[in-house]
Length: 307
Image (cartoon, rainbow, N blue to C red):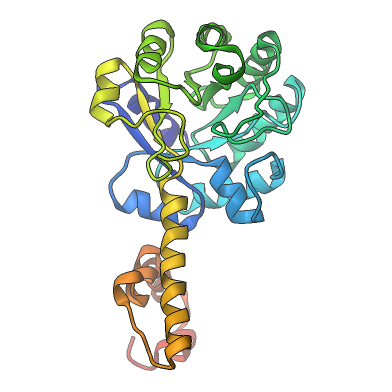
């Protein structure tokens, strides 16, 4: 785990912007690694929606979040940054939440300054706690970690209710409290991103709402444009959950067509093959383990006499 965390720190401190797609289950985590990305962020919203079938309004609890994060961390070699929401309470709750997330094998966590229950950063009705209270949460997170390479990202949602200047002030307070990188959600313009990047003292994350451009408040920019502004990390939080849902909708439409016409409608372009799926999910590794460790009689039962 330490090596993953050291790699994550190296990536956020490097000269090239780190692009972090957001993952929400084993499929997405393995796919992002297979496609060559160096790190990923576990989307709290996507994970909550995937697990519970309800929107990102603070319904997913700590234990559900830990279980999902542990599963994703254990099926990939990528450094993953988990989403601890508000830390599930006050600074004392944050202390124990950070220790619990560290034990899952993730490379770090994000903690935000919304009130609880929180909501998706691009939804209306957000409220934030006093900056001084969040500072103590960050300090508690720093004190809690056992591995000093475990990263703490501090997020502010102050831009919408309190303005850009307050978001900048808060991020610098959180940086002074020990946060390793910072993040302001729902910025409204290119100039706001540029201003924020110039005026914060720790590596900055900016999320790009690819796939939800009609709903996202932040204008879409390329990784190169963000890097030129001084942004260290580009998050892509909603692309994979949205693409997965769109793919399922298209596939189910084909099934509906088949039921309507009474004919077989096969569309292999809408799905991966059985073989592709099991290759991505690590079935060849399972077979290799079986061949190394099962007895001759067990192997014969599975594969016949020809091993």
